[in-house]
Amino acid sequence: MGRGGDVSVPGMGRSDVTSWVPEGIDLERPSAARLYDYLLGGAHNFAHDRELAERFIKAQPNAREIARHNRSFLRRSVLFMVERGVRQFLDLGSGIPTVGNVHEIAQAADPRAKVVYVDYEEVAYAHSTLMLADNPLATIVQADLTRPDDILDAPQTRELLDFDHPIGLLMAGVFHFVPPEKDPARLVARYRDAIGAGSYLAFSQFTRDLMPTEMDRIVEVMKSSRDPMYPRSHAEITALFAGFDLVEPGIVPTAKWRPDPGFDDGGDPDRAGIYAGVGRKH
Image (tube, rainbow, N blue to C red):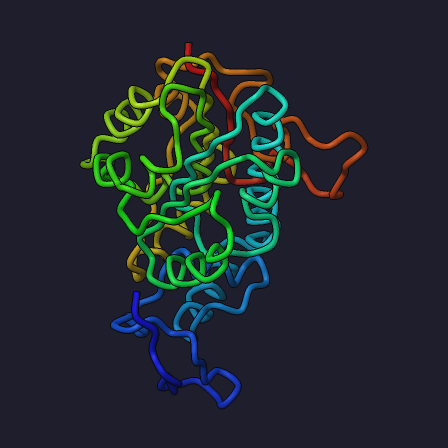
C-alpha cells in the first residue's frame, strides 16, 4: 500500500500531525481497530477514534480492562497451542500491531513458527506490513474475514501455511463485528473445513450475558463507527464451535480461561464482558 506524506487532520493539534497515514484513509469515520489500539495505549489512532473511545469508556467504564483481558487471552491461547505442537497461525482481525503480537509470542517459543495476519483496516495493514518487512515467517493479508476464500486462497496464505498440518485459527475479539446476515456459523465452518484435524480455534467476543446494561450502551455507541457490534449469548457462541471439541474450561469470561497461576487483577472476572473459548478440530 502507498504511504501518505505528512498529514494534518482537521480537529487535531500539532502533536497529532502524522507521517504514517495510508493514502485514501477515511479520517472522519472511526474504526474498531483504532479504537482498540487507543484502549490498549497505542498511538495509531485519530481524533475521531479517540472521541468514540471515550464514549465507549463512558458506556463501559472498565473498557480498558476488558481490552487487556482479551489481549491476555490471545497470548494464553497461542501458548496453549504451541505447547500442543501448533507452529502456524491464521489470525483473523489481527488489528494494529501492539505489544504481544502473535508472531512474537509464537516465535519466542519456537523461531520456526509461522503467522498470517488478516485485517481489512488500512492502518492495521500498513503498520503490520512495516513491522513484518524483515520477518519471512510472518505476513499480513488485507481482506474482510467475512470473505473466507479471499483469505484462504491469498498467495501469502498459501505460501506460508501448510493446510495439511494443524493450524491455530484465531478469532479473538473480532466476531462481534460480524452481523447475523453474514451467517456467522457458515463463516466459521468455512474456515474450520479448510484446516486439518488437530487444528485449534481460539475465539472471543462481546456478550450481553455478563453485563447487559453496559453492552446495550456499547452497541449504541458503536453504531456511529464503521464497525457496529453484535453481541452473542453463551449458547450462540457455543454453536459456533460445531466440529470442534471445546477444551477445559469451555466458554467462560476471558479472565477465567486458563488464567496465569497466581494472577489476580483485583477485578471481578465475571464482569469481563467477553466470552472466550478454545476448541480442537476432531
